[in-house]
Image (cartoon, rainbow, N blue to C red; front, side, top):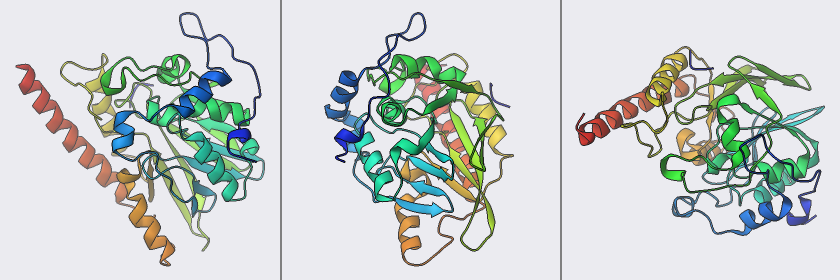
Length: 308
């Protein structure tokens, strides 16, 4: 097991900036959040069209897609408030807020913010969304320092800073988060980052059938160094995660980048009338197996190039 209104004015201030833990930068204030939102997209995000709009929609039951064309954000609704998984890029919160409103929900009813991992394209918008919602931010211990400093410090995004955000609650592998009759289970799946966290939950379709949804953090290398490791223990983390994931079962595979789970194709099938467009009991296992093959190939390539 791995180690364990206009959109602009919709961002409501729910507290003042506070100092982070010892040794970390102060958490972002409204000026920093606004500046990050107005800044040009990072080159890799612009080239990949990660922030292009995508119409929000219901995936199944109480799971909604409120992200962009390239980067996922998920709204899980309950009678007692909502859960929002991932904040996408620093420039994305206005889209996420508008998408939630378009679906008929209120951003201020979000009670929990979750994070798959602390890279800029999934955590960059969390500070703005926390300001807008006043929600409790839940994340892993291993990614907390990055979230509260706003900088990863290694890999291809080492020089990209995002608004720092306070983590309110630390979760571990197998921990449960419950709200309004919905329970999500945390799965620590490190490698892509030390605290990469996937989530699973039951969801019932319109036909009454019960499904298991899995929100995958990431098992891609994402351009990071493996030889030498971007962080100590990275290779062992990846291998432990691949082994762990071989025993996880779910028939709705969702992920933090649209291309990982075929968002556009599945949504087109859903619009055409297929109620099970997102249902595939093999998709999660297939993704894990392909990710492991890709990882081993990249590790061999980098090891050979380094002369090891």
